[in-house]
Length: 86
Image (cartoon, rainbow, N blue to C red):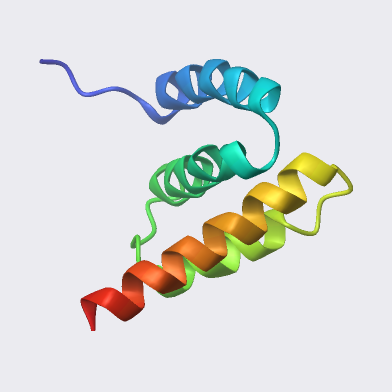
């Protein structure tokens, strides 16, 4: 199976993001996390909980209410998962 380029992954994500926008902010959090992972991958940076949280919090500064709600939910769920793993 061929490895997808960051551009292909981003294009696929945009389609999933459009579906997520129709569901509302609370349902948008998986898309926010996926977007953060794609951005870190494209930048060839390490995917760590700290990097994900920082990137998602920056996304949460958006003027879009759905993105803000999704980012807040994503950060909460990520911190909860980290706490369970510790």
